[in-house]
Length: 265
Ligand SMILES: Cc1cc2nc3c(=O)[nH]c(=O)nc-3n(C[C@H](O)[C@H](O)[C@H](O)COP(=O)(O)OP(=O)(O)OC[C@H]3O[C@@H](n4cnc5c(N)ncnc54)[C@H](O)[C@@H]3O)c2cc1C
Image (cartoon, rainbow, N blue to C red; front, side):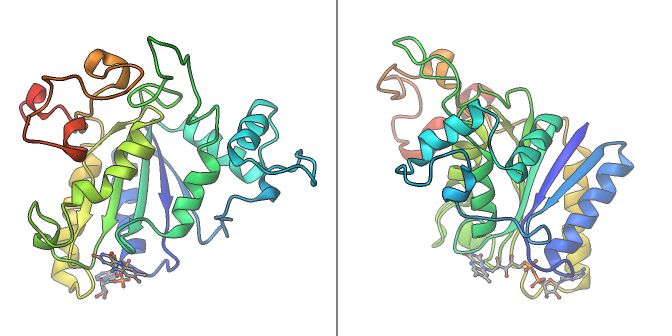
């Protein structure tokens, strides 16, 4: 398979840098082809602004959604963004790797998403009618490909458990897994998370590295998170609410959008 790893850490000699090398080594050992977008090393511009839309008249009010659509449609997105889109189309698997910073991804990676996931490419795709609400959540430009997160966290695993004070890790990562990756069509694999990493010793590192190697070995076979497809019949259109009777009546929030029962998880 072809794998794109988007790496968001400022220091190559970090734990994240070491884990990235472990992942790449294992993927290549398995015969996969790997490309890396190293956002800090490449000086990735993280903010969306007027410079992203050079064909827009300078005195015209900037409406980011409309400007993104026009630039995508006319092939005038900036070269750095077009290069990332080309890599996404090339890759069978997308891996986003980052340290958890304030319960989310570092700003540089959020900025990569904001700029690269353009209108017409990652959103605003497909028919919007009384039967369909666009090609999204399981359908879209990136359908048929897989994606997963590699995340390191200072907090303990228990702190991110169902009753942990930080909130469950699956909830914290839901906006990325469901909102960013599933939205344009990726099948999203369960995340790889390394907890309590700030005082990791050599033995601890080897255990984490081995767990990561195993995930890289099983990239093609790991079952994805069973998110419900938007246009698969589970949702009312146009309200986009889960149909009455679906999901555990005691469940609300993010948990409703994965069909754990159907898959027996
Ligand atoms: C702005 C900010 C916000 C944060 N917010 C959160 C948050 O919301 N939730 C949370 O849980 N945590 C949070 N943290 C902690 C953060 O998630 C961790 O600091 C980060 O995940 C550690 O990853 P790193 O690659 O930077 O590790 P490093 O600092 O590079 O390394 C961590 C440990 O691993 C060891 N190590 C590194 N490389 C190797 C190697 N090759 N072999 C063996 N050992 C190695 C180091 O010696 C060190 O002990 C935050 C940190 C910052 C700076």
